[in-house]
Image 1 (cartoon, rainbow, N blue to C red):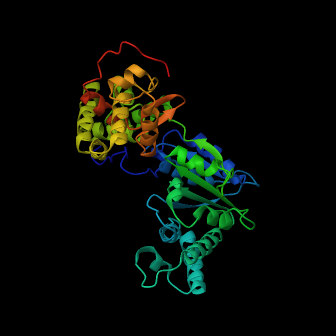
Image 2 (image 1 turned 45 degrees about the vertical axis):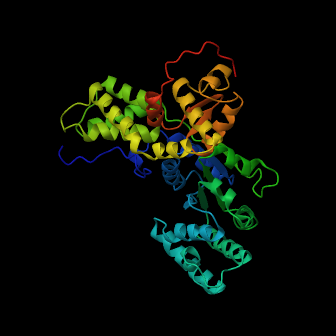
Image 3 (image 1 turned 90 degrees about the horizontal axis):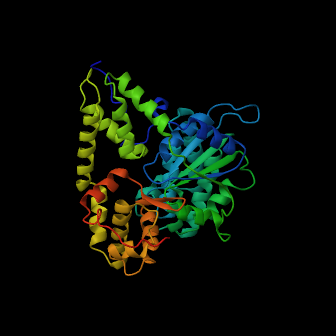
Length: 400
């Protein structure tokens, strides 16, 4: 099978339905909620598959689910880099004119053309250039409102996805009020909204504070973990289908080493796949060797860069490094143990949760129930291996 292509995609969101693992039932659940005119806020740490899930959800929304739930169109607005209303306007413009379906692109071009005639200038000017006479914030707000009104006219059944929605909390000009007025008011009953966020607390704050414009306006859901069995079957099939069958113990080790983290699992599978010849087997030894290579590569990754910045920071940032090392070495179930906090250099055990909350805002850690964990398992393993404290006994372990 010399022409077989790599089936494991880890460096970008997956849009091939055959390579999206274990999300069909959840996509159906979310699609029916959205079609029932209820907005959804979806939480999930970074690199755990939110954007890939959105691709799966778009396929599900395009299906008919009965007479009262016809197919819906989806427009995805990526807010990852938004810091101002002009930036928001640019993101909406890109989402409209760059829609993957020609029918929606043409409709968007017509709507934007009509809007530009109405407002008297090219929206692209707002996106990236410095105007000689800067528009007043009120003008940017009016432009964004008119643009979102045009967006809602693209389809009779529409879901608008605001990816990394929590970024808007730092955007001046009251963008949430503009969204509510344009997409959640009279005349927008055919529009449902999906808000996604990798910083759970920030997104919840925008939804749960009574002084926020979108208070109480979305059902809150957590992106589910992919079941181990689903991942095992997917990996086994993909290795087999491309002429590189995998031993059972190799697959088990692969999933254990990555904790079934979507991105890291695909990355380790890719590393095994591309170093295994067609017709050869993926063995336990080859997975262990591939895992070693990936863990060592963390030294040159963004994680190491962030760690170096924190190490050169103030006491609160040093506490973040201490908290990372603590969780990597000892798990995140007893982070307020006085003895453990002292071992890692905290002046008080009460400072550990605050450091972990800051790390969660950075997207480096998250929490399941009462247990903290490092989101990327390769980063966690790299930290653990480099730690001088990983095997140091603690005589007293105070409970949380």
